[in-house]
Structures are given as structure tokens and as C-alpha cells.
Amino acid sequence: MYQFVCVKWGDKYPSEYVNRLYKMITRHINGEFTLYCLTDNSSDLNSDIRPLPILDDSLSGWWHKLSLFQENFHGLKGDFLYLDLDVVIVGGLDEFFSYKPGFFLASKDLLTGALNSSVFRFRIGSQPQIWESFQENAGFISSHYKGDQDWITEKVDQASLWPGKWVVSFKKQCNSRVEHSYGIIGRYLRGKGLIRVEGESTIPEGARIVQFHGKPDPEDVMDGPYGIYKRASWIKKYWF
Image (cartoon, rainbow, N blue to C red):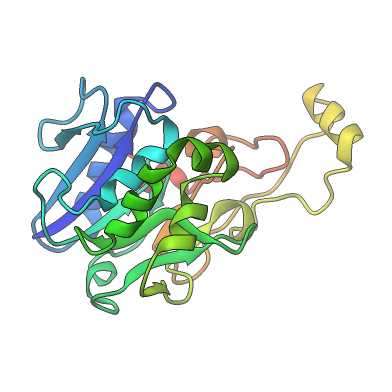
């Protein structure tokens, strides 16, 4: 049984994003699986998705990811693949569970060099120091670190990276950005509709998951360009 988990907190993403994630997993995994959703609001979730209540109401946003590293997380056991709600799955997922058993696996953030926490594999209870050390000084950490992935990078043991281009960044690896943005002037002209971003982004060969960190979200570029980013009509083939 393959096990997946995601986090939906607040109103940034609707339940439909979780439901789409479930359907994408269905099309790209060979075998039975369960998708758990750590959430403060389970309304409108697909009945096959298993909601899990938020464990610490004092946290907000991405910091809830850290609670996944509790030694006894909702009584669950085994290996899990965590997925952000704004990823687009474009290839097979089976090997995400078999590659380098026993290791914490993630991709490298191409902006900061830290481990990117959009897609990571972990074993329940194997990295309790991430949560426990955060709990000791949560207020300071959440105000002085940019996000959960910086804390995970600092505290994780036995970490390794996904191979090749299994997990890619839409912004950095999908030929998505215009060659010349023309700075503030370009932003003004695009806003007025006086210039338009042309062309189509592409999925790199071998990619299995595309990360959409920050803006744009998949829906922003599915039917046309967004700011300096090209249209990604291929999203319609996978994100439903």
C-alpha cells in the first residue's frame, strides 16, 4: 500500500486542489494507495481521501508540515510521499517509494540551495528531531526562518536527492520565463496589454512532478501567460 500525505490549511487552496491531487495520483501509481490530508477544514474532499485534523492550532501556513515529523503522527506508520497541493504530476510515482530506501528524499531548491519541501519522502517517526527542536522555540524559528524547508534542511538526518529531473521547477526548468522581461517598463506594458508573452513552456524529458512554488499556480498559466511566464497548455492534460 502506497501512502501519500498533503497539507491544506486556511483558504489559499480550495478542496478541489486536494481532489485533483488524488486523481493525478490515481493515474500515475500502480497499486493501491491512500492519500491523507492534514487539514483544518475537510469539507468537499473526495470521500476516498482521509482527512487528518491539524495537531497544533498555533501554527499557520507551511509550518504545519513540520508536524508530519512527530514520532507518533496520528498513529500512522511506514513511508510517506508528501506532495504540495500545487504540484502537477506528469509521470510515474512508484519509484519514489523504492529509490534509496531508508533515506529522507527531496529535491534541491534552485533559488536557495536548501532542500525543497514540495515533494519529499519520509518514514513516520524517523526524524522526530525536526519537530521536537522546532517545538522548543517555535516562535523564534517561525519568525527568523523563511519557511519550513530551511528548518528541515538544518535538522534532517540521512537526506538525499531525487535523481535527475524527477522533480522539476516550473519557473526554472520548464522553459517558462521570457528571455527578456524589460524590468519595470515591461511589467507596466504587460499590465496594459501593450506587450504579450508569447510561446509555450515545456516539460523536461524524464520529469515526473512539476513544482509550482510561489506564483504562478497551475491555473494561472493553463490558458495563457502570467506576468513573465509563458502559457503551459500541457497542464490541461495532467491537472484534472
